[in-house]
Image 1 (cartoon, rainbow, N blue to C red):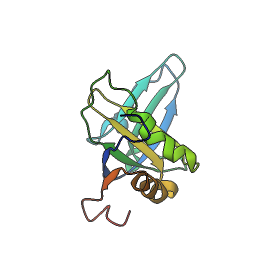
Image 2 (cartoon, rainbow, N blue to C red):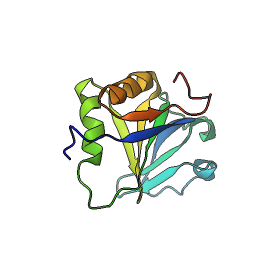
Image 3 (cartoon, rainbow, N blue to C red):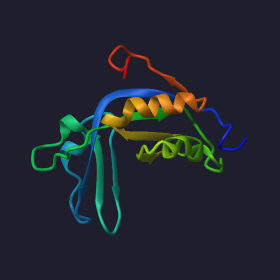
Image 4 (cartoon, one colour):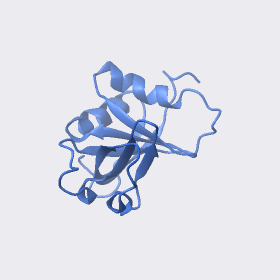
Length: 139
C-alpha cells in the first residue's frame, strides 16, 4: 500500500504542549518530566523538550502551544510510508508539524491554531480520527 492510499487511525490528546529548546549541555529539567507524556532528545546542538504547556516555568515559555495526535500502532520498524501518509496531505494545505517517534508508534504535534484544520485534513484524506473524551470533542 502506498502512502497515498494508506489509512491510519489517530486519537486526540487533550493536553496542550510546549516545545522548548535548551543548550546541548543543559541538565534535563525536573519540570520537563512531570506528566505521563513528554519527550526529551539531546543532540550535539541542543536539548529538545516536549512537555505539557502547564509544566513550563516562566522564562522558558514558548508563545506557541501545540496539540497532539497519537497514531495508532504499533508499526514494524521496517514499515515504509507511515509518516508520508500523514505528512503529505498536511503539507498540501500548509500545515507544519513536529513528530515524535517511539518504538511502537508516532505522535504528531500541530500548532493549536492549526489543529482543527489538521484533523479535518487528515479525515478528508481518509484517515480516522477518534475524538474520544468530551475534553477533545469539537477540537
